[in-house]
Image 1 (cartoon, helix red, strand yellow):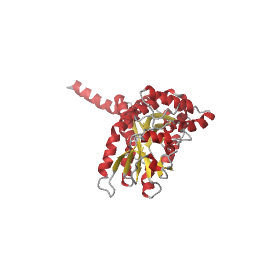
Image 2 (cartoon, helix red, strand yellow):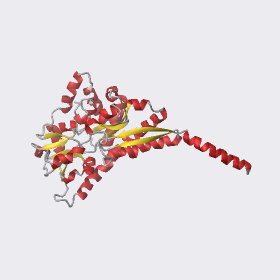
Image 3 (cartoon, helix red, strand yellow):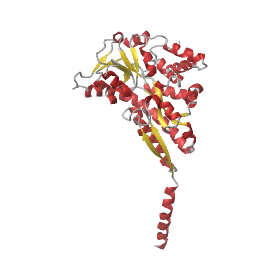
Length: 357
């Protein structure tokens, strides 16, 4: 009994010492968009949760997350600078709106309709950021370490009135995020720069007649309430940004925590890509369901066969126009477009237009 009591007493003395040996690391994680937007919500449910799970295996470290999602620290036009300057430690950087600072990150947007498989596209971009020095360096020169990548599901045109084909958008004002406004070049439509956070109000107030956007973004912002016609083109996807950490914050982390975040970032990228595939159809059907009783019921308008090819062939040489001035500045854009397109083809994709040829 005495020995048993001694063991119990010793255990009682050791337990608090073991607990106190765990180091708590405080990090702020933020975004311009709310967590109802799937890829933002997955920062919490996948990246943060997976990091916590990995660290719990050894118990040496735990992270105290200070969450600032939904634009509480900064808006969509400051996602890169806010991480770069340490306003947040970790944040989603919206590369669509950072064409000047992240030029090569616009490659997929300037080679539109090259793939309609978002998961495969993210796989290609992950490979490129690991193997292409110029692509990786354009992020790292802004004091960032990329942890996970984001992309889009398929794009369609959400409008106040139904379309019969791409010719109908001539003369229309259509909201589009940053570089994706280029997809309207050659169609006669006018791009109105915006983001998911502005589309609803833009259409509601008449700033635009509709929006070029994606189902997983349109559903949570209820865009269908003001643009009830979903004109379905299935217009491919695009690389949209990254979950990144401020380099100074990164270098102050223990190696074990860094390794956990790298693993969690890969998990986030893969999970996000699969989520884009699985939830696209769900989101479209859900908007029809939710908008069935509104004054103008939500209607999916399938575009006739060949309209997507007709649309892409209306465009000028977007890839060439984009790449030429960058090449002249020493940024290997033509080379990068070729690497991107070849990586898609090597995985069995058949782009709607061979932008590198």
